[in-house]
Every structure is written in C-alpha cells, then in structure tokens.
Length: 146
Image 1 (cartoon, one colour):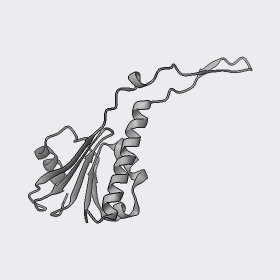
Image 2 (cartoon, helix red, strand yellow):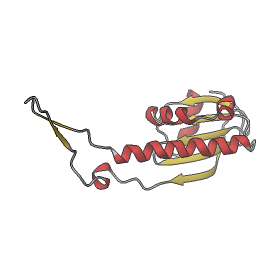
Image 3 (cartoon, helix red, strand yellow):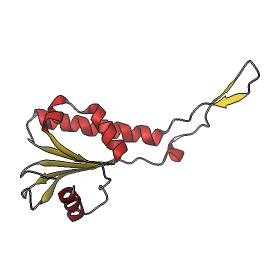
C-alpha cells in the first residue's frame, strides 16, 4: 500500500486506537505516534449481572430464552463510533489529506457505518488486520506488504 508523506494512519480495535503520521515517504514509512487512546472494557461476564429472560408459549410449545446482551461488544462498537467521530472532527479541521485505517474486520465494519463524507473522501486505504498490540516496525511492514 502506498502511504504518502504526512498521511494519517489509524490503527484501532474495539478498545484501543493509535493515531500515526507518516514522517517518511511511500517507500520508507516512518510512522510517528500522535495520539494513543485506550479504554477499559472488561469481559462481558464481568459486565452483565442477570441471566437472559424467558418467555413461555401459551400453545404448549415450551419455553424460549431471550438472547443475552453482549455488553463488551456494545462497548467496542461504541468505541469504534467514537473513533469515527474523532476522524470526522480532524477531517473537518483539515488535519490530514490522506487517511489509512487498520482494524480487525468487525471494527472496520463498525467504523464504516459512521464515516463522514469528508473522511470517506480522504480515505486512501483500509487494512483488515488487528495490529494494535504490535510494535510500530511490524505495523509499517504490514502496510508496505498490503
């Protein structure tokens, strides 16, 4: 993937976002961290308190359980929406001309739901990988290989 000098690179998942600026060029990336944001999102078993509700059928067909809410996933989706909102604000301030997003498929899908038209116009590429826990040189290699 070709990433221009001064392009904005966001590496995110459902609980961590890393904002980078490419201080290198298209051939030799040099990602410099501009911002890191991480939220505490405990596993769903630590967030939910009740068992799912049940319903009874009047025709004698039996019982059925309602699907339990996944609070952990809801929080990850909310975090992705917040990330998209931050990108919108920065795009409207003209903080970047070119944007590359790196995120796992589910987070990428959630981000896409919330992209503003200014963000979409500046989007140069997306990479569906989870690289938030990787060192910067590994992120650079993955982007060059993409």
